[in-house]
Amino acid sequence: MEKLRILVIGAHPDDNDFKCGGIALKYIKAGHRVRFVSVTDGSAGHHVMGKEEIAVRRKKETEEVARITGIEYDVWDIPDGCVVATLENRMRMVRYIREYNPDIIFTHRTIDYHADHRNVAMLVQDSAYMLIVPNFCPDAPAMKKNPVIMFTSDRFINPPFVPDVVIPTDDVIDEKFAMKNCHVSQVYEWLPFTNGVLDRVPKDTDERLAWLRRPLVPRNGKVLKEKDLNVPLESNTSEYREAGDAVRYRKKLAERYGKKVAKQTLFAEAFQLSEYGSKLTKDNIDKLFPF
Ligand SMILES: [Zn+2]
Image (cartoon, rainbow, N blue to C red; front, side, top):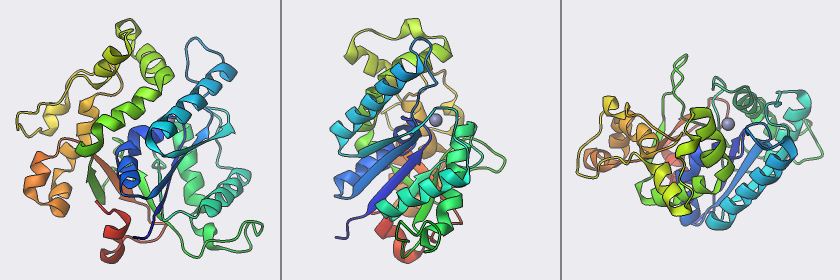
């Protein structure tokens, strides 16, 4: 088996886990190499801790994810909220991607809501073709071939997200929640604070993980429809968040896995091809998404 090199490039030290945690775990289990990078240090979003203190803590949280999953996790030093798609950052991105030499890159769409997400996405798009151009950053050897670049899913509609690949994540959903559970300062502090539910986060570590998953999606064979997703969520994540891509893109699941599996699938992650990387073809799609 050819070992794939997967690179997930997100803006903050939890974006990759939320959007690609399931597929990353599947790659790892299949013997491939996965690296996450957070382009910012995550130092902005906290209601109590100052910038330096929270940056150190967020880094430790990514190290815990790496420890429990086998995913490599880099965090760059750009302050949270301050990513700009400058030439300097483009060159840094090109060198970084070339050094790792990935087969696939996953990143945000350029219309995502957060300026950091958009600028990270822009940096990846700006780097895409330059990766193979030898006289651009000649100190880092150019890649022989552009990687395939996939956008992670979001709910913005101008233009809408249209998935090319949808992968069931039922088999890794417990481990995906374990990854989210590592981001304590986010999922049990900052996000509940922004949602006004900080006082409802359980103190006990097992109880709070159970709280993070609630409400749970039904396991009684009911096939969820899009209208069923409108349940009130207390935390920013719940099993319903993980079910969204499976419900919305069930037709796409059926194309790849058949109607029966598509109906039984509770959780999924969806990805859209960027036109600036290598193409997805009948020949390479099953090699790059071997699940
Ligand atoms: Zn983010």
